[in-house]
Length: 138
Image (cartoon, rainbow, N blue to C red; front, side, top):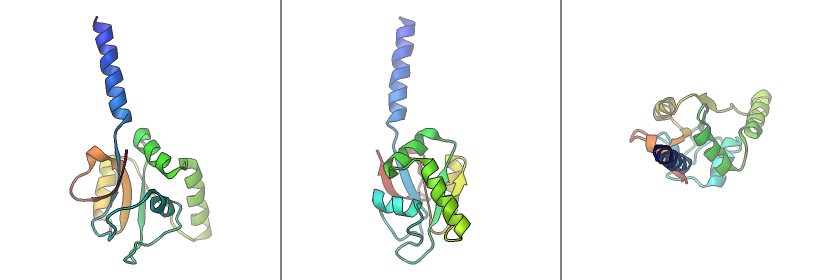
């Protein structure tokens, strides 16, 4: 009986984790109140480098969190390697800077909250009031 109960709890927890939402967050200085997936892709492909108010977009990318990262890149329809190639080409040509790579969700929240024009992503349940949510990924 006990192994069956443990298995059921494990399955329930696994499915809850798999269903966790991801929030695309921005510094409170960002004029936008929402983003579409297409706009987000333009940002992360470095096609759009300024916000509508003219401020520079400061891209940040979470690493070391496969579940959140996978959900984010699935929404973009790109895998991380594809975008890293885009970022490297843009950096080598001098056209743009790649996103700042952030190693934890807490660090992402701190960097986005303290950097004018910043945008990044974290698990929805990590978001605090010092950043704004532009998009929630189900």
